[in-house]
Length: 241
Image (tube, rainbow, N blue to C red):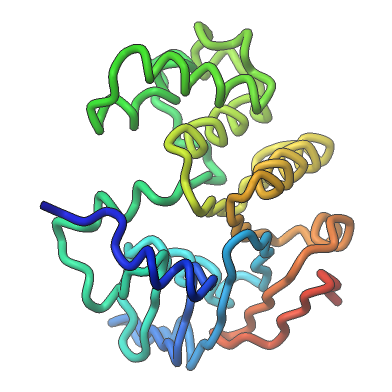
């Protein structure tokens, strides 16, 4: 039996949900994506990750999600050491986080309800539980009246809010938002971050990758800045240059 509450006592005693310890990642084509990264993101934080294209932001996120493995160092997420996690544990590990993508990644032939419910059906949740949790997630993102719509009937901002509801529906401990405002207009960008802020206020740790420095300035949260695979700033007041 797989213990999905792995190292809970450790988490309670050590509030770090994400730790990078001396992490470096090199790709076969010679790209040095991350170089000796040391970072700690605690339970309940809201963190922006910023940097130019090629700075290492995508690799940073992929290592958290266990889509890539580091060459040296250790990545620990939610009590799991990524170097030691077993293949059969990975699906359980990923259920502890919700992912919001820049390109929405909605299933076009499914309704809004179906898209949000999909991950619950995969894990065998009851119909009653699915209805309750999907309704709650859609209500939180302001789409309670859009459950029967299809993605092509929604604006870009509405599609991204569906993506956010889908990330929320499993009650994750961590939300990873990878450029979630990249395909929406400026006004909707602020609405998306407002929603993420409210989610964070309710106790969920949020890590948001973005290139929108004005957005980062206006929300004033912790900012980790990457440059050429290294952390060049970690400003807990949220200021960026």
